[in-house]
Length: 368
Ligand code: PEP
Ligand code: MN
Image 1 (cartoon, rainbow, N blue to C red):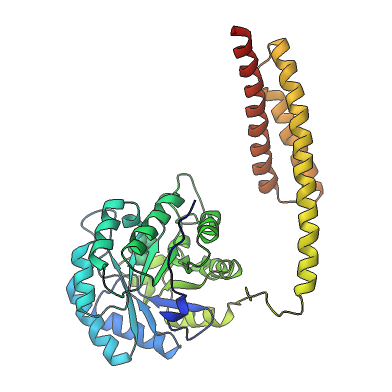
Image 2: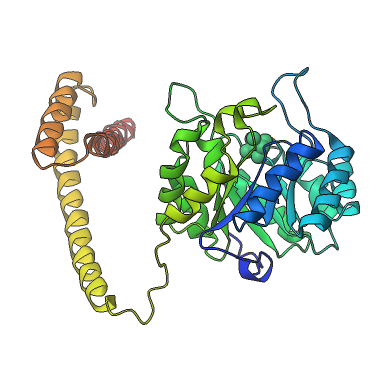
């Protein structure tokens, strides 16, 4: 699916002062004092790559939409004063021109911009010929191609200091998350673009501060390259995203409690064991494919039978029975119920497709 992108390793363009890499700072730069104090405290906890919203993409008008150029002036003063770096969200040519004028170190493209190829192309054209690192947030909707397309546009403009931010997706229905993570999409991104740095944004995924630690740990366990976490000196009174911001102190505690596991498998004493387990998994997977082929063979027989007897492919009673008994078996084995439920929905849909093909093929033959 992917064209290979020309991407520099993240260590070339973000100084990693701690493991995990953490970018932090307020959702919005509200006042000089709020920004300065937050950054000062972060710096005292060993974090010197800050984030701050300068232009805020708010869903409804009439709410705080950022301080624009004034905030950039504060940032450029604070950069000198505290010797820190800043990442800022940009959405158009004007934002880029101003950010570069005030010496912003890293730019990111927000979720509401990644959805729009015209806007992403405008940004790509404006950034062409510069050496500015760019991070591309996932689009609001769960569309991997749109996310990859945005990364390709920026890379085609010659930006090689390029990474992605996973901030979750807007979904209908209720969820404990503000933006549902759908981890599989980020994993698919990584498998299409293995050299792409991917950073997790647990603040926007969770929408509340209580789940940030566990979500951050999950991202690290999945091999993410870093985290971007919103922090504020007075989170409850923040002008945007108040529920999900944490104090620099809480952030520092999280940073020391998070465990970074090694993704480098070379030269490890456990390599031998790991390979052995992987060989067994290969064997089991082969068995799974054989068993699926056997099941499809049986499904085909039923398809022929249904054709002869004019039965419909989908029979609700049989489906309910399959569903219930398989879930009972899975629970007995201590397996995750939701996982088996999803698996059987896919298997059942596959079976219906096979049967439909048989029935339609025979109808076509009959006509001839
Ligand atoms: C933000 O980072 O504050 C922001 C607006 O993010 P997103 O684009 O993920 O909504
Ligand atoms: Mn925010």
